Image 1: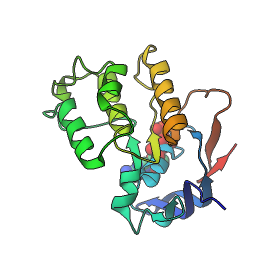
Image 2: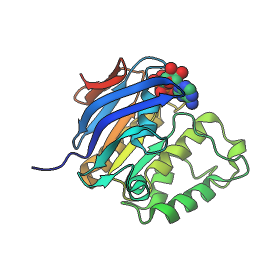
Image 3: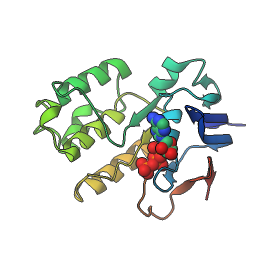
Image 4: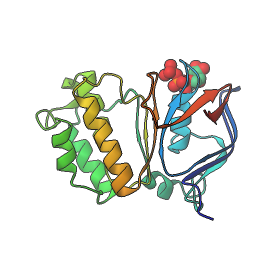
Amino acid sequence: MASHILHLSNIIKAYHDTVVLDIPSLELDYGVYWLLGGNGAGKTTSMKVMAGLIPFRGDILLNGKVSCNKQPVQYRKLVNYAEAEPLYPGFITGSDLVALYVKTKGEGYTDIQKIIDLLGVSSFIHQPVSSYSSGMLKKVSLLLAFTGRSKVILLDEPLITLDTQSLPLLYALVEEFHQQYGVTFCITSHQPVTAGSIRLEVQGKNIVKI
Ligand SMILES: Nc1ncnc2c1ncn2[C@@H]1O[C@H](COP(=O)(O)OP(=O)(O)OP(=O)(O)O)[C@@H](O)[C@H]1O
């Protein structure tokens, strides 16, 4: 039987003494998932846990073999994450960030310049990020999530701050990476999502398929 792309087991995430996530088991197979939930429900925390960026109890297995807790470097190379509200040192440029990610993540599925052009980032990528608007910053962080050859891309609130022209471009990129390169996506949103997508919801402290 094929392994799940992500299998979360016995996840407990607490901030100080307050448990915010308690996920006994969640299996994500190849797909494009939308994670829904109200303010403070735990979407960002779930994304950071799935990205292997914050400590938690339990474990996540990628493709049935790469453990988030036991092989964190290998795991993080295969799971990319774009933050809801990205923060970078102000003096660094978008090009510096792309160079760093390309060096760290290795060869991508597609030429990164194509994605830079598609998202309309070329005109400001050489400027320091302190000069970016929040939408420009968002585009750069989304661009970085498409570097390397990850199996999973997690996008936290990609729709906020993006202009309306950019939304179909992002959807097309998600579709291309999913269909052509076999990438599984988990995307958080407060907005109603497109028909046919797989929906997850934070209910209580658990994540369930709805
Ligand atoms: N660093 C932190 N320290 C303490 N508590 C935190 C921290 N980050 C998040 N929380 C708490 O964890 C809970 C879940 O927060 P989280 O940011 O994951 O929610 P969210 O669903 O992404 O919310 P929103 O839709 O408003 O962005 C909230 O009660 C929040 O107060």
